[in-house]
Image (cartoon, rainbow, N blue to C red; front, side):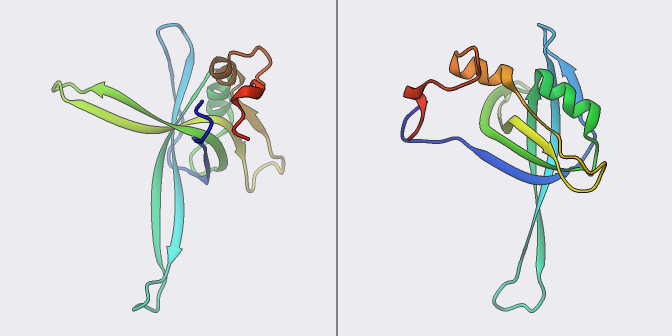
Length: 144
């Protein structure tokens, strides 16, 4: 991690569709979700508010992916904490494409439901990123 930068995303929004669970070739579960965030604003020359929706592609692995698939459904309000990652891929016409996604590190259900707020962190991702067995970042990697 570069000491003078930060890659951090926090989203609060609604799931646009039910989660899509897949598995990698090494049998690690992966889930893709789309999260909608809304914004209202009023232009100087208008009297009415305008609403705008932004869609975010989000990805989770392992236990976090299992949790999302089992408990979170379309329309659910969620809090997501993660980081941006851009991946390069080739489409069926052999064109190079890029996709920027939010890699979910923590997700929490919000709003109405059973009254409880449950969250899950992707500890396996944290361990891979830090090289630490307990999910704690090494002191040298902290940005402060």
